[in-house]
Length: 454
Ligand SMILES: Nc1ncnc2c1ncn2[C@@H]1O[C@H](COP(=O)(O)OP(=O)(O)OP(=O)(O)O)[C@@H](O)[C@H]1O
Ligand SMILES: [Mg+2]
Ligand SMILES: [Zn+2]
Image (cartoon, rainbow, N blue to C red; front, side):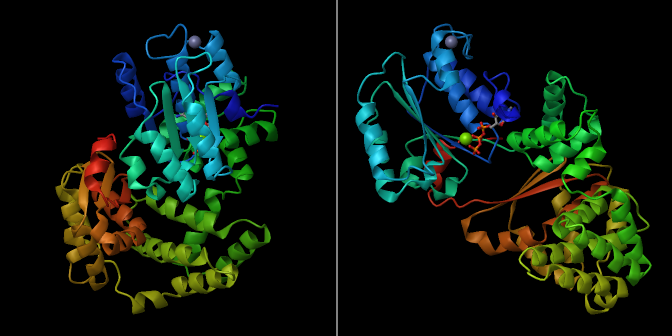
């Protein structure tokens, strides 16, 4: 049986979800017939790079293009969809890393297309090519034959030499939003004649973390798992997630210093073979989602801070259970509180009264809070955040660092959960933050080539 994500690979730009800037870009450039000889598609896994490469190959060779979209019914489109079109060549650089492969391409590229208008070479994960192979590719990109187009896809643009980047049009694919993935999941389920509840689709979307392929793989598992309507409970079961009740019980046990209960929950998780990291992530998410509850806010922020530290540590630990138990017992006993400065929230509360749900200049408020003398521990974070370029847009805050600010970037990255909580507390709703490190070694060439997203 064909996998769900293959079955529903978009065949036109219209069907592609998210990636509006990419669609717009190709709509314009195809309309104006401004086709580049080399494109770099960079971005996370399963967000549409290969799919877009195929759509582009089709529209460039299509006999009856529909505006900027391929017809999908002419001989050429059908052959490309089947993978049997001689002039569209796909190569996986992860398994063909060497120079011979690229030399073959270089030689073949000089011949005219067999039946299409363009010869299109799609090279996946091309950052894996060896140095010699890169150099051979570079030669071809320097003097590309008129009828040849290279589409170079990568999940790892940092590993691509500047020399290649500067010769290509770079298009950056983005993670797809939860809302869009959720809608997509519901649509595909409908096409499969199956029902899925909205909260189940939302949970799949959340767990897919921006990737459409992962979302469809999860959906496929769920469709196989049951024959009835798919509910949020099914998703929880299949993904090994935790019932919200356990998360609540756990937090209550911490408040009440109920050590026996805490150890019971811990044993239950480990005995059932569930992942403790997932549990910790869910507690953090839960706290973040319930940020409006002011009574436990202060306590929860503190717990979140400690658990996010634990999460980082436990990922690389071999003795997860002991590490978990010790830290959780310390947390409930309150020993931490005496050792560390507690997070002082009195000024957060005043700010809250003064602002009415606007994110404007939010960061300066966060900085004020961090500077508060009672929170010595946050001084490092204060200076690190102060050195960032900030872009606030509705519920989304981009924190950008340039090459020379690697240390600041790392500090802020390590405190991302706490920052997200601070921002969210200030506005009284969920704020997403994105912390980005830009290694602009050769800023000019990059700036000229990377299609700006905002
Ligand atoms: N933007 C999108 N819209 C709709 N479906 C998508 C999108 N991106 C990915 N998919 C789904 O995921 C599948 C895989 O997508 P694709 O091969 O284009 O990902 P990719 O970005 O090339 O990933 P990788 O980096 O792993 O090669 C598609 O067949 C499709 O079902
Ligand atoms: Mg791909
Ligand atoms: Zn066609």
